[in-house]
Image (cartoon, rainbow, N blue to C red; front, side, top):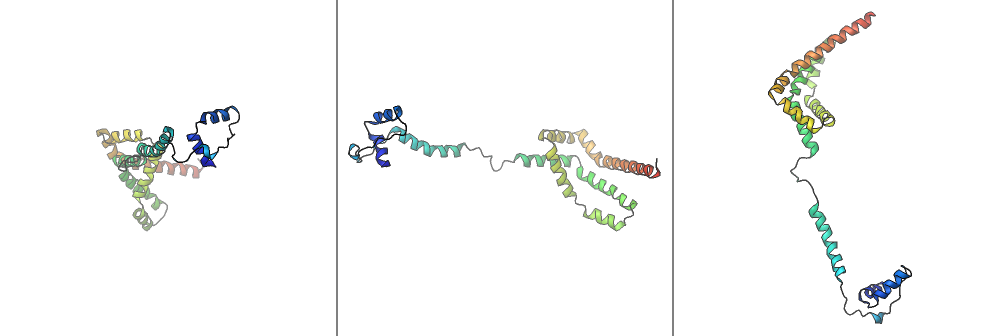
Length: 193
């Protein structure tokens, strides 16, 4: 039955009557069609049917062609920012600063009464790569890429290189000053001052 209606809509000389009839009265009304009115020996294709078929094929092909996937060799934004953060830490001489600060802070272990074997084990096991990775994550999270770029530019300049060479020494001196102040403050509190 549906086939007869579809063929009737494509081949019927009365199609205008059927359309105007259904529009003017009821959009859901169908007119029963007699099979002898619509011969089935040769189907007719209208331009709109051909256009619809071409569009149905062309749309997925066009969508694939227009898809803007980055090239596989392109570095993702996150990977680029991480690489730059690592470059910045290297330019800042961060690993050496960590190593010297860790050794200086281990002096506190002796003051705490811990044996030298503890200090040696602590220094042997301390994973600087893990600390660098953690620091990179923090820089990536907290800093915009433009800021990282500006810091890299500074640390790779002559003044930046002078500063980077002094970072480990400055870090240890600031840490020791903080420890001394903390010890003095703690002593005052214990003495009731």
